[in-house]
Image (cartoon, rainbow, N blue to C red; front, side, top):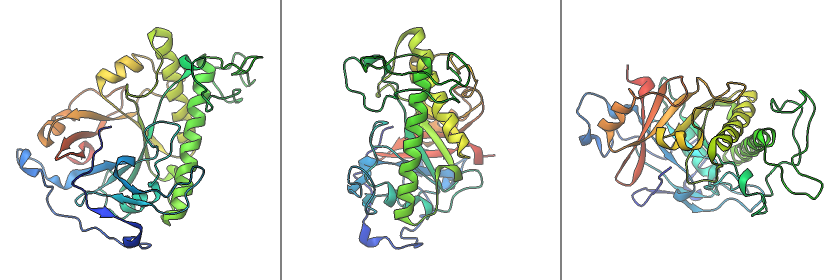
Length: 312
């Protein structure tokens, strides 16, 4: 996701108090003149993540403080990035950003606090890099196990990672479990009482992260996203997909996995250039079925998110 924040007001630890709404919701977005006047800007939220952090609350293992962040003034709902740019890094000011979003009004069809999670599949580079997050073996619930219900190895006798569908699924499940733990930890620090099972979780699928290529690689990439979806749904979350059709086709192609877990998930489409463009994106085909419920556009160096689900 494109995330910059030079025009954002700072929200520091000193300004944050439990349950306080520290930001006023402005009635009109700063870029509302870009619309045709057909639609109200009250259906617009923002997404933020680690680029907006001003102070870290992360010590490398857990959250020890809220941290500090910059935040938009006019959001109706907020989508907060759990990770720090990759699936193996934490957003260092996640608690502060969760508290910000939890204080927003929300919309009828958009929870005030939502999350997005970085995704990847590094299976193809296991021999080149020490991928410490790669699983050592699969779980009994893995749908790609050679024998249903029987775990199998994801490292060989020499400790090298095994790159296959089952281990790709397990990698995704493990990254999702770690992301959920980050949210739990950050939620405790922020005092918002929210976990991933309470809201919407978007899987951020972009070419900027590590993916496998070719027909077999796309199937493994889809398996990773299946594993992430399976874990978040087991926690009670509603899962959606963030991408562009171009990036999705490169990374996943037409694959939805053997379980079909990706089929029918709602889409959050990126790439619009202004509000009116974002509104038109609501009519575009979703990534795997389901509906296009959110579209993203960039204005004044900020990410804005239009709620297609609330425009009717």
